[in-house]
Image (cartoon, rainbow, N blue to C red; front, side, top):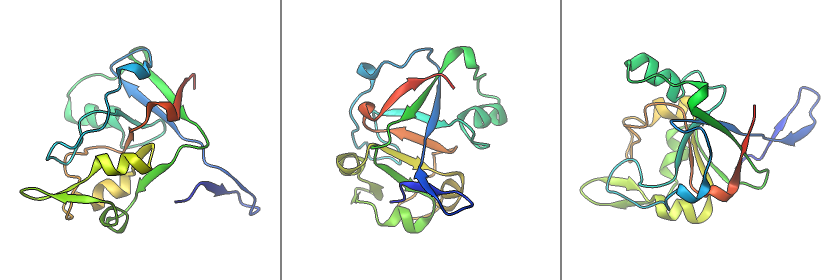
Length: 158
């Protein structure tokens, strides 16, 4: 798991993750339900956000599908603590090494993932590459940061 970036001079510094959630003005960690497997490509629980600067985030998907308006007035931003463990899914090879279970098809075992990670980041590239894989993430329609552990982040003004 990569926990740093490298600047052009080769100096390493921590990754800083900023996400945005639409549909509420205030972050209340007590409202976040624990992660539960649901025999589907998405778990129940957690907090669904998108990276702030994503070109394929929730706001972009809603606009492209004419679903709803995502306004800054009805949203909040989060920053993840430096110690947060992020499960990055940027390719099929990232996905297939994660724990899964078999039901009528193969599903990620989100409960086991939540034992080892604080959040899942499905990148835009990962979203496209895992739509038809086995297991698949078809239904994750945008670049996503799924917060598994609400203690890994805090509300921030960006």
